[in-house]
Length: 148
Image 1 (cartoon, rainbow, N blue to C red):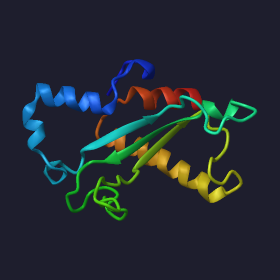
Image 2: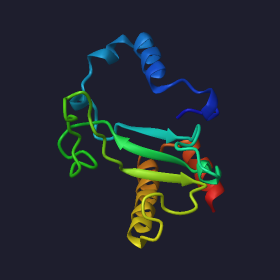
Image 3: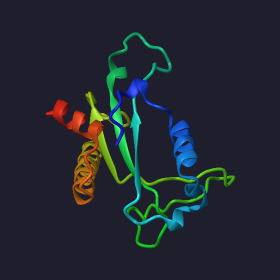
């Protein structure tokens, strides 16, 4: 529920380290110990465009993705199932919600109406998830207020 502007925030790694220093018992938990309502929101803000092109207009788009953290049976997004990476070096977290800011068209398939429907469904899912948990997420509110 970070309220600091994006450019002044700690990275996820630094935030996790600071929390584990304050609450050392957090280091003992595994994803299966978390409740089904445990989640994380990742804010994707552009820093620069790769490859550098003739216009930076497309660079303005930002995203919020919501992901479940629990690996308990019955978890939201279980159909996508969190799983180990190819070499076991990480996990995949299913997306259970999405919000965009300054997205002019779809990134992957700009003319695909199915992708736009999926984006809309993920936006609705994010709204329902946050409402269900009574969570006020400042970045999500910012995106909603400016995309209308």
